[in-house]
Length: 417
Ligand code: PMP
Image (cartoon, rainbow, N blue to C red):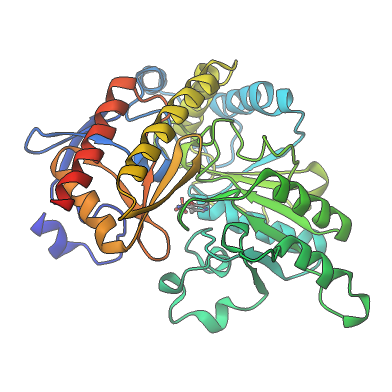
């Protein structure tokens, strides 16, 4: 660990606090160099919805490599890419009556966000993008413009504040102020000469920002208002898409049809880099080759991504499984909260992204450290670091879910001693 500290810069955020070197992983379990086993409630910050080394995807991948399947093909049409597009259309888009075109962007979520905002600006001829307090959309300068976090923006504010307007996110509004109504009023004020924004971008649940859940009614209202004023709605489903909320897309329950959707993290199913921008076909105003990149379209990721959809999204079984685990986790976490109301102030979330809010960051990090000591990996989030985020793999076995909760409960008890 000391070696890592010496050679790696402070830039890394996640998991630095875990003082060991990890070696292997399987399902919801990670092992370390000392042959200790940890239950993983971080799941690659949402990149491992189907667990580590999912055996179904691993088999497909090994088979593909064994057959000398194409790994890197730039923009060549490949069998793996065509198969992914076919299953994504057949099992994800068509049953939901979503008619998106898809674009493979550079390999990370941030790249998909960049593509979305560029396309919003190109296709509308307008510049301004509206985003929300506590939003997280990535670290490149375009995506960081839309990310509301002082720590990440520090020193770059002058540049980042261009063409960006922030509104309070629903979960942070108190006293009846509604930022969707506010937006409607501002844009309806014809004489003011206010520049119409190109787009609004939002997470339906703010993952990094503290698991703030936007109610379905508010999402519906925002969709109505954006349609009324001709503003594009981009849903960033990078963290809470791919089943995290219990449905494949996080906006399904709200019954809205965003103009663009970004996906990454768990889309490949295997922790392999892959990112997609979904867009309504009429928005595809790119010139050929206008938005490109060497690693857009990772064929190994296409193989595992197609398999993930076939394995988990052909019918409702997996969704029912998530619902059941979610109900269990909520029930137990609420009991823990009620028994520890002196240090725990809230439990919230949806599906298998659930937050427990603590009175302060120090208490929250004491709990995560104690949990780690006893075999559970779980992280804090939110701008104040006082929120512990439960993000287990969606296919976690009930025994590991129970065991993880038990370790967490014991961690709370021991920090109170
Ligand atoms: N958007 C959201 C909602 C995210 O949670 C993240 C990553 N935490 C990103 C964008 C950026 O993705 P990446 O780190 O893969 O670039």
